[in-house]
Length: 87
Image 1: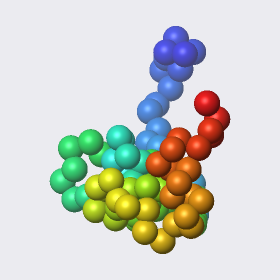
Image 2: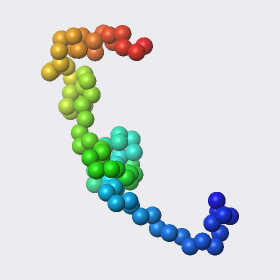
Image 3: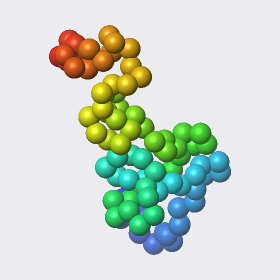
């Protein structure tokens, strides 16, 4: 490609209309915090940016191994037992 473009002037990338560049954490995919060293910039269509928060079934809001509060007894049991799942 370098040979094909030899002598052609460099053109700065232009963000397509409607797209938004958002700093995200490369490990989590979540919106990056100010000064986060693991930040990359990604382009998103309106309404498709990274979530501001997430919740993992069986985990507490603080990231601890929660008790499954708010889950049905069946869902909580499946989490505790492994429940068959895909494997």
